[in-house]
Image (tube, rainbow, N blue to C red; front, side):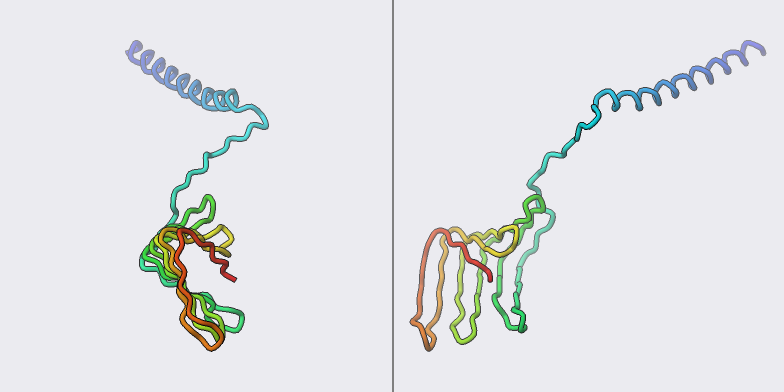
Length: 148
């Protein structure tokens, strides 16, 4: 009987010592590897945080009148640089008393501040006639639109 109690006590003591050793190592190892003042930085990844399909967004001015409409097949947003990428964007800009200006492209990218839209790939700009101006049609590979 005595021998069984001794083995049981030894096992509990060995288990306690092992747990103590693991606890000490979990404290000692990080303090050894990370020096005081050292900053660990996560590598920024360019992964999207959301996407939307069949996008239709209207922007209004301070009087509540429509400034522009942005339509796209897909929007993908990236939080690391606050950019949005558009597939098949169609931008319609409105000015009081003037014909709307339509701009189409294969792709588009918004700047982080949201004040510019860079449209690329077979860009086409069309404005119909109005009382002060003749109609226009322009084609290019890239166009930056300032969204007032």
